[in-house]
Amino acid sequence: MMTPQVITPQQMQQILQQQVLTPQQLQVLIQQQQALMLHQQLQEFYKKQQDQLQIQLIQQQHAGKQPKEQQQQQQVTTQQLAFQQQLLQMQQLQQQHLMTLQRQGLLSLQPGQPTLPLQSLAQGMIPTELQQLWKEVTGSHTVDDGACNNHSSLDLSTTCVSSTAPPKPSLLINPQASTNGQASVLTPKRESMSHEEYMQSHPLYGHGVCKWPGCEAVCEDYSSFIKHLNSEHALDDRSTAQCRVQMQVVQQLELQLSKDKERLQAMMSHLHVKSTEPKASPQPLNLVSSVTLSKTASESSPQSLPHTPTTPTTPLTPITQGPSVITTTSIHNVGPIRRRYSDKYNVPISSDIAQNQEFYKNAEVRPPFTYASLIRQAILESPEKQLTLNEIYNWFTRMFAYFRRNAATWKNAVRHNLSLHKCFVRVENVKGAVWTVDEIEFQKRRPQKISGNPSLIKNIQTSHAYCTPLNAALQASMAENSIPLYTTASMGNPALTSLASAMREELNGVIDHATSNGSDSSPGRSPMQAILLEIHRLRHPQHYQT
DNA sequence: ACGTGCATAAACACTC
DNA sequence: GGAGTGTTTATGCACG
Image (tube, rainbow, N blue to C red):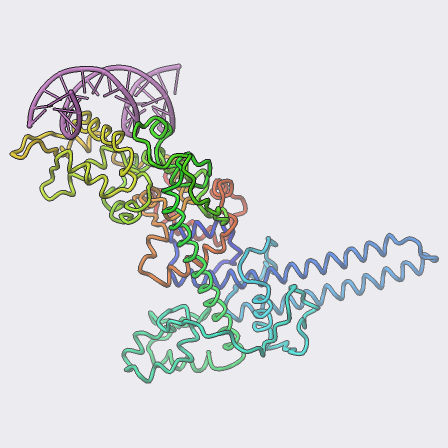
């Protein structure tokens, strides 16, 4: 195993979106990241101390006002000795800390790499939690409950948290979840289950491997697993500490999940309310107004909507989310550009519509497909694969909120497309004329395969990096390219959803256009990221063709 | 710069 | 005559 390093939020985003990891791997990754954060916090502290000492030393050297040069030199020497001593102490502490983390199984370090690069501490655990973790992880050898900061006045700018503090409030723990070691240890559930059932559902045992965080010991059968569990993960300081770490992880995830749920709610309500806002709203974050119509349509449409700019609506408090929310750039991709993408890459329109049916029905978002594609879809969805013009109209208005306005414009476009494209064949019927699709003609006019052009691929990846899950076109694009967005892919998988939410939270305030663009070419890719990229490369070689 | 695909607008013809 | 339907042309934009 290679040395894990702190993954940047952009990298994390990429990992999540490309789903290169299983939920279990993600879990391990999260643990590693948290351990690394803790480690970095300490590193920063060490560095700070070191700098401080350095400054003191320099000050001493430049004091120059000592009456006697000899005395000065003596003092400097003393200072240097003290400095060295402190350095030694720090190094020992570092070593101790690293060993602890290694024992925890959360960190695996190569001998030649005693330290990790100092990077800014990502948002993750609040200092209190870090402090508590610090105490819990290291407490088994250097317990000093009386002193809050028993390690060289470790200052995390928080109140002292005693390791004997009462446990956190009860957690909503799903004993089935493989992410939770505590439940399996503490719940008396076993009594109510048969041996077989328990074997099958024990969250700490799967595929012949112990799933205790950082363990992965191979256990041939269930009984040997139990033996292993009792011997290696008995009730001792280490297990308790690991358990608490896991509690923290779970708690953090739950907190973040609830945050994300709130955010989703806000986004949904925002989109719904926004659909009644003046279309000329200058708000750049107004997704709906930006995608409602192209300029010409919205300005010149004779049937402009009842809501004009003179109709004041309740001013919405701008959602002051981090840049992970829909950005101006991403919004611009939702208009005509989006439909280009989707049709260009032959996105499975039926799956996209099915997947986002509710969204399209409620939000006035332009579907990312051409009129021709939509008409075809409408016809193919019908039982007899034929529709009258009026039925096509009805399908449009039924399926898309977007087409409930500017009827003259889009209906004209529908007629225009029906006439223009050879793929639409008009058939005289008993009840009048109906339209059918000549599939061969339709396929003729569409390029079938995505090219291997890296710039195109990068475009897609870049786009989806800063677009929200609601960006249906990009979801479709991902689906087409076998890069499912975690939001869709994690549907029905609570574990993955919560993990994804948690990790997404890490990205708050950092995902913006610039960073997304740079994500692909960011220098200093970590070994972890290199591994992940390699996995993705293996799974999706077509994305890396040149 | 140019060709292509698409959306939009509009004019026109035809039918009911 | 008006509404709905179907055809055609023109224009502008984005993209390769």
